[in-house]
Image (cartoon, rainbow, N blue to C red; front, side, top):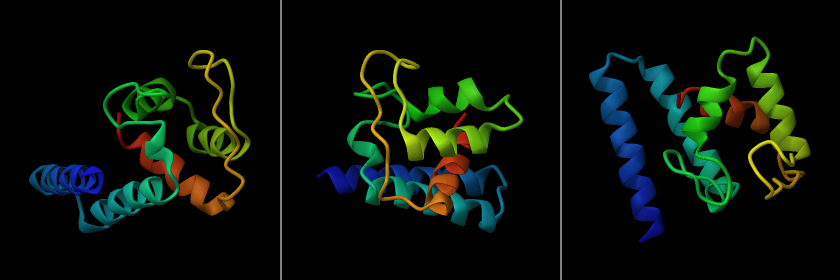
Length: 113
């Protein structure tokens, strides 16, 4: 059931991207970001649209998208973890990710604003 909701979310993202004239490359990058987030268990604590254990990824994008170094900043937060920025629940370091994977996730999150 959980994976079906992700499939519905992915399909909705594809439809929205195509209906807004977003390129196939941008769509592929968005799909890759969502798939990586699902594979690496980001969605165990985060949701795209609503706060869960961690902040909604949409809110993260809105907060940081104005920073020139947003992708790099979020990449380091993903890799090294964080505490106290979004409340008292810490985000653990994601040592299983490569720096490239963290950058992919950070870039994807920033598209969600």
